Length: 419
Length: 159
Ligand code: SF4
Image (cartoon, rainbow over all chains, first blue to last red; front, top):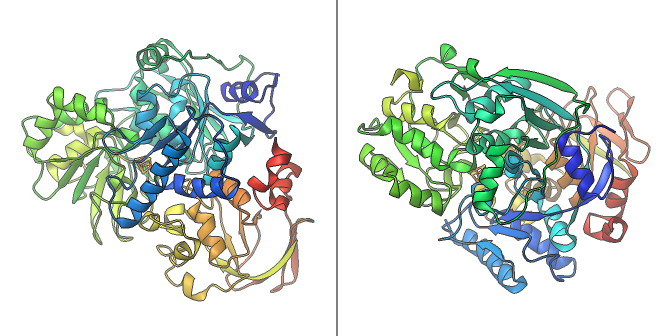
């Protein structure tokens, strides 16, 4: 039976020789993740179900990133509930303020995910780790609680869509533009229940940060997971971040894909998703002059060091438009410190930006940059649904760090090549 | 299991941010969540919903975040079942795992219609025009979880 890369990882974790699309399986987990919003629900379920030991206190990650540093009393109570649980059960990977970063930036950086792993997380963007050749997918809190208790989860084996990437991205065009282009192409349910498997000779030119960004938004096309083949770039990243050994699974030559798309990276341009769907994409030949009120550069999609470096390249020695509140949020403590050491934070502050401690904050309309009625933001985040960053009548335009920084300078949505 | 209920109709891509906006996620209390259910899509929802009502929607219902608060809010608001042309996959899992009945079905159903749903046999009957349609019941594996009353209660079956 010829299998895709995803199917091979699932089969290995279900202790089977092969799995077929549509088949329901019970698989062993290498890591179970939750955050300050989803963990409390999972912990309540866990406690209701007998409150025993967790399956493995080293294979659970609890990251307090959404409403932290706690935005209000209720959020503080929620985090406290998780903190107490982590302490009581001896959870090794509990990350609180001062150590925490946005979960999907933090876990790869801490080396908690390596190629071949099977990871579930009670957060939809858990699909990010496919960049490292792992199968990872978002689940709900009950799945998470069940995973914590048993180290297992049920899955419906997905079929796959293949994306053959070739060529190399032009200047200012990034992984964000690749994935926005793809979502525009196939729609927000274009990969529903399916894997998005990337391949082709263009993969080699994409950094791990680009791959993490691309897999991060697989869920925005309805995908179960996104996954990249393991190459030298992956192995180098894993060796630098983890002490664990990667397990390499490659798709069989005869693996079946429901659809195959060929994408020439060199032909892609900066892409913006207009409100209120990530699939509502446009390139600058279709974008009129749209004034904006806020720019957010951060999130699990684009809050990594390379994202901040791109923004700094455009903002260096310049001032942001005084009408645009520009908020920059390094995704982890390490990224924050690296940004300080490399002089990026100087550049941002001199340009008139606010630089924040790591948090999800405005990405989900939580805190730290909420929009008023009628306001517009350009954000490097991943969702632009109604009310996502604040008032139901505000608007979010999703874009790359380069577009976001260029727009902060001019006050309208701007193509970075024109700066 | 069979139910009868009145339809509240929505369109495609009803996302978890409108089902329960993130600003209310600083709690996991079902009653509090239900008080804000559908707030950003249909502010009248909480006023008009009656116990036993059925939400009917288009494709990709529940897309967006993994928040289990979404099916919890819907269930706690009194909704007996969600019928949609398709569901986003995490919402689909969460509904099964938390015991919110869902049905994948595409038919001519309008706001205010009265429906009978027969889950075991996969039949939907619309009182308005007395038409019947069929849907595929859940595979046995998932039926077990649903019949057990949620994932944890099915723990023995799942080992
Ligand atoms: S940054 Fe945004 S999308 Fe990412 S985990 Fe946080 S809230 Fe979710």
